[in-house]
Length: 345
Image 1 (tube, rainbow, N blue to C red):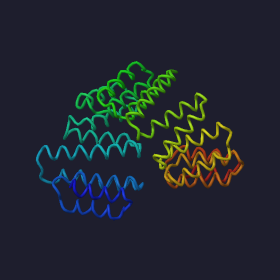
Image 2: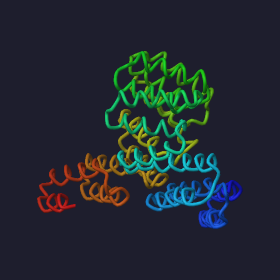
Image 3: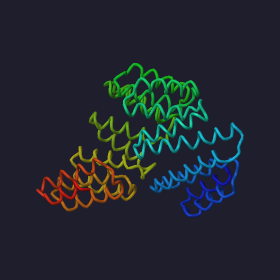
Image 4: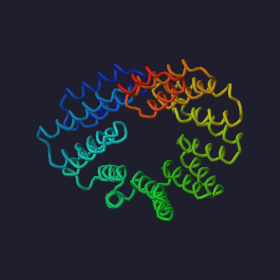
């Protein structure tokens, strides 16, 4: 299984999508005893292509395969935990189906009760619906199960930060970095915490230290650029977001930050160019369509804006902010018929 998966991953990275699909499928058809990586690889491929339902179908088939066939107790549990975590996080983070995500993750925990990723997933579900006390219990279990699980420390700290519990968040970030000093998201979260507290100098030091340890973690550059933009250092913000986009031009949020920098510099002509370039590089990021539509509205180009919002809704038909922006647009031009059709949709 891992051999088929590694070969498929290689072809996927080289852009040979159909060949990658073929290799993953061959691995599945071979009925390998350790086939979870192949199901996972094919599911992640569909996910990268925006084919969410196919990804869910493949991962569910993987779970069914391990439940229906004879494996050792340990072997089945490990494979079920691996696939259940990925499937549960798709339901949580992409479909925003907390109930379904939690059900999948809890089913996985019945097989592998000390799985740190599954415990973290349940904690994130509880946090999403505001059950902070229950979330804390699950975060703690996830960290106890694996003290080196950096994402658990980071997610726990972020929840406390959002709740205004800055002291607890700081402790969690520091503990996480002690165990995993090369985890970029932990540095980013800690820097963001200091920025929220108004400790701009400390935030800069943390972002800089994070980049030194994790030079390829693009969100660190973006977070630091946003800090400098708020602080009025436009040149540094431009330099940082330029480095981020050089490393990963497919990251839509980077183009949004770059556009905000030019907007703050009153370079309104560049804003539209940057957002269009962002859509070229990240065509499935609906926030880029929404931002460019708002820019077109500011220039009085209503038809262009409407077309952009409709294109965004083709990509993500359940995106509420896009519907809201489109409704505002139609109301602005007194398009009663258009609003009625939008309400039906």
